[in-house]
Image (tube, rainbow, N blue to C red; front, side, top):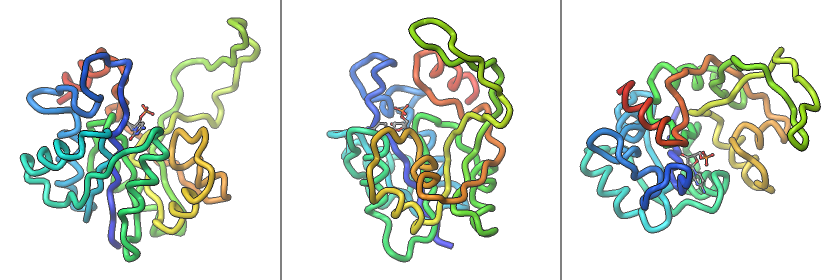
Length: 221
Ligand code: C5P
């Protein structure tokens, strides 16, 4: 099967502060984007990569790919105003013979071959998609106006991560409609009745949101 990685990197990353978009904040010697880009490029599971870059950062994205000798990068498209819009733009670059799309947040730099393999495997078993997830360690509350309205049972609840893998036809159908409120790809596929399997996630797929997250990821490198 032909596997296309869609690396969404167009977020502003306002909570990180600084002048650059999150994907171009430093992680070690290089921009954060370099880490997931290199890992996807080196993965034997991935054939081609499309990056959704922050507006105005398409050229630096291509230069970074060249610097890393990431030969699978076929396009750096301009990301949209939401994650879902960025996925839609990147998905439009996948040709008709592309079978599988693996969508990954650049903000989760430490993607591994092991998790890529775990999300791809269910697609050969008749699933429409697969998502890595972790159980919730904390007690979960629903809050209304600062007051706890309810303590939600953790039974059956998980926190979804990326990379998320789907058949391209499934993902195209999911992204053909209204994208409002979609914080991941699976939610749009589920809404159309798609069967999405949950596989084991990885704590090191932490999403970098704050400077403290960036320091944690740097310490894991
Ligand atoms: O904003 P959030 O943390 O949900 O972002 C998750 C991923 O989606 C990040 O890698 C970010 O760069 C990407 N994103 C995007 N386009 C946007 C917003 C977020 O590609 N407009």
